[in-house]
Image (tube, rainbow, N blue to C red; front, side, top):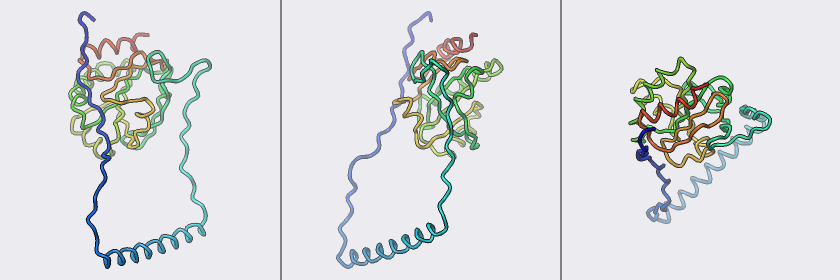
Length: 217
C-alpha cells in the first residue's frame, strides 16, 4: 500500500460482573418457611428424576465430526497456518464447517457483534465487496460473538446484509481463535491457509488489498 495503515479502534469484550450481590436479611419465620419450601421442591425434583430413570436413558446429542488435517499440515489460528476447523450453525440452524471450503473457496472470516460500533461501521463496505467478489468464489462468514439468534437475525435483516452469518452463544470458537477484541478478520485462501489476521476495523482499500491475497490463484 502507498501509505501506512493505522488500524481503527477495536472493541474489547465487556467483562462479566464479579462483585457480590448483597441480599437483605430475612426474618426467622421467613427463613423457616423458605427452608420448608426448598425441601418440598427438592422432594419433587427427586421423584421426577427417579421416574425419568425408570423410563430409560436419553440419547445423547450427535457429535459433529471435524475434518482431519491433510498429512503434514497442522491446524492453527495464525498467519501461515491451516485455519483451525470448526462447526457452527447458521441463522436457519444449518451446520457449517470451515473445512467444507478447503480446496474450493477463499474465505473471509469475521468475528463481530451487533453491539460493537467499529464492527457495524465497516459492514456496509463489506457488503459491497461481498457482492463484487461472490461470483469469483468468495465466501464470507460472519461469526457473531455470544448473542442469541433473534438478536443477530434482526440486525442482519434490518441492515440487509447477505453474507453467511453464524451464531454461537457459547463463544467456544471465538475463544479457540483467541479473539480478545472485535472486529477480528481472517483472510483464508482456497487451500485453507490463513494469509492474514487483523484485529481492527478496516478501511475499504485495506479490505481490497487483503482480498487480492486470497482471490489470486
